[in-house]
Length: 241
Image (cartoon, rainbow, N blue to C red):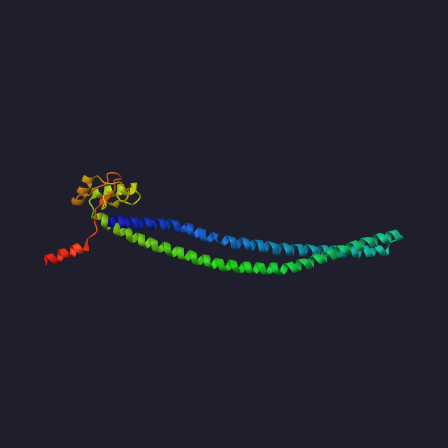
């Protein structure tokens, strides 16, 4: 019973130790949402700034065209040429007004975008801090589990050293087959593991024999451990006194 208890505890610790790296990976993935939010907001802000810069450059180009057209207007020899230059100047001026209007729109849009980026950055920092705390807890838990596991393995070695080697072979064979559950209770006349009822004669032998008995169905070691009737025990003690 002591050996099985140690083995089950060791199995639970080994499972948890193996699971913790996956938990850490899952914790790190929780940053993805905050990172994606920041990426989207930053991309929107950068796009806003890039469009404004392009429009400002377009305005400079249009201003240069207007300057050249005005110079050409002074050299116009016919009324048609003069009108053509004026028409091109008006077109450039209209393009400038359109660009300026769009720049104003983008400036209005940039304020909430900038605010969104700062909010997303603050959220990401908060999430990173939380994730690091969770990862630290997972690492600490792993260290603790490994220490407990080492102690359990030491205790197990001591228990095994006191067992009959042949019995230990039976134990290990059953443990491998049933993944750790070696001993089953048979107090109610059936194996508590496989739930198969025991033969009456076999059950009687189990109750009265000191010999280790194995379930005829699943092969586990059977334990007969009836509950103690305290009232009966107290009556026996009083009668003896």
